[in-house]
Length: 56
Image 1: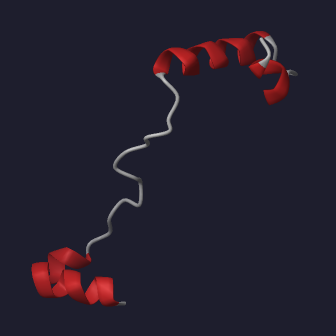
Image 2: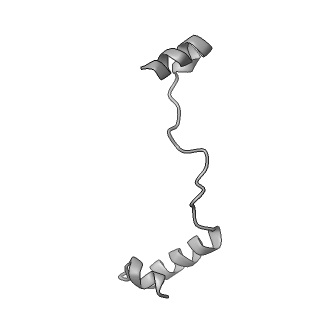
């Protein structure tokens, strides 16, 4: 409630508009190359689970 009141006080009605809840950064996100490799392994071996994919 206090967040909405502060936004209204600072920005008026525009401050009450819907905002994304998506984080600005993801510091623990895997590098793109690792993500691509995992996606390729999942396509080639759809029945493999996380434990088996980590051992590949």
